[in-house]
Structure formats: structure tokens, C-alpha cells
Length: 219
Image (cartoon, rainbow, N blue to C red; front, side):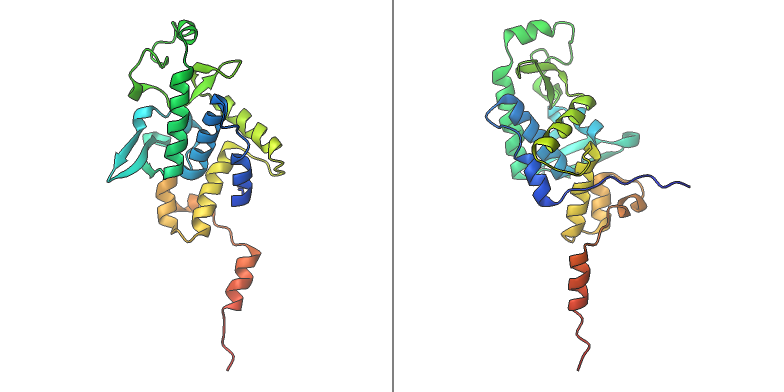
């Protein structure tokens, strides 16, 4: 049986290079930075990110969290660190300020999606942007996420192939590399079987050499 290809993952330096690309002085830059940081910091799938509503971000035991409905309607809760929350709030604030009456007029046929016509909690977390970078009225599409990753990869001069799953793979690999146990990473990713999570286990040559160097059997 042919094995399913496992996507590449980024080093922390490469991920940081990606995150430096968005111009956070603009609405688009704020959105792109918040989106990328959220993906790298939570391991959410592309479909999960695109379907997020504002109400999905909440507080649990004094910790900001995002409630996710994954594959097979499986629910999970992932913690959000301070940096992610600040980026999301900065984007949402800018989006509210950028949503004009003209945008609202364009959204008359999109009831339920329009940020003006629904309660804040029911609004999508991430929206498309207009032709000139102004606030859009449709939720972020899968294609838009793909395009964003291709663009930032090019600007950041990353040679590796980058897809939305690359951010998820990077999230898992970084946690495992920092000593987080496999079971915890499995639950954060929403994997039904731990074998799926094991695909993200990587051991660098440096770690292998360091492991041998720690052995001291000689008298």
C-alpha cells in the first residue's frame, strides 16, 4: 500500500520569517499576521480556521481558548497564548473600523455573513478583503489561505513547499521537539489515532549526537 505523503515542516526561524512578511500597519497585514500566528500556534486545519466564529474564542479557567469542531464533528479545545490573542484583537478592531456603509450595501444578499447584520459572536473570525484591501463581507475561503501561504513563502525566500498542513505539521513537530508528550499533541491536533500523530516525530542529527554524547560508561 502506498503511504500518504507527509508534508514538510518549518523550523522556528523559518516560521518567524513567514510571520515577519505581513505589513501590520494595514488591515490586510493585521489579518494575515493573526491568521498565520493562529495556525502556527494551534495546529488548526485550514477548514477549521476558515469556519471559526468570534464566539468560538472564549475563556476557560482564566485561559483564552478556541473551541474547534474538527473532522467527524469532533470537538476539541486549544489554548491561545497572549501573542495570538493580541494579534486577533488587533485585527478585529481594525476590521470594525474599516467596514464601511459601501461594504454593507455590497452585502445585502449575504445575510448571516455580513459583519454588520449579525451579532458579533456569530460573525466569522476571518473575512476576505476587498480589491483594495478594505474589509470584505464573505468568510475567508480555502483558496485565500492557499494564496496567502504561497505569497508569504515567496517573500520570505523559503525554499520548502508550504501548504496549510505545513503550519499544522510545524506546530506538532515543534511541540514534540520541546518535550511535549505524544498523547497531548494528539489531543491538540484532534487525531483519533496516535499513529497519525507519530508521523510528526522527527529526530535531528544534532539530537542524535547529543544523546550519544550524554553516555558515560567509561571508567
